[in-house]
Image 1 (cartoon, one colour):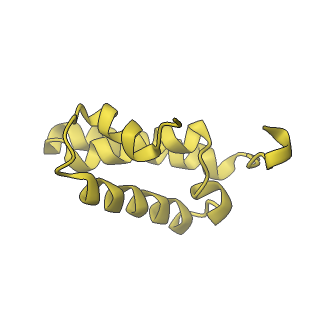
Image 2 (cartoon, one colour):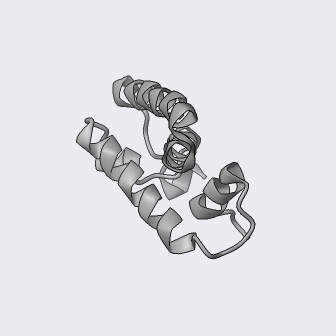
Image 3 (cartoon, helix red, strand yellow):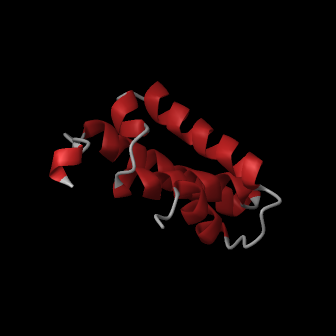
Length: 97
């Protein structure tokens, strides 16, 4: 069974219960929207590329952290976002897998 982005974010947050699943789904969607707002194509922002999923984990860590720690994660997300935006990433087609 493939690990979903929700599962990966929960692992990064050290959450093992399902009580926050709906909220985590919303935070991930918000992170993807933030990527698009910053100029990342919808195709890349909504992909399962590892670099995108890492940025989404960082976005969620910023959302759930205490203010001083959240600031560090927010800066990290901005850096990752800028690198994604400037890159020439391509989503692999089903033929490439």
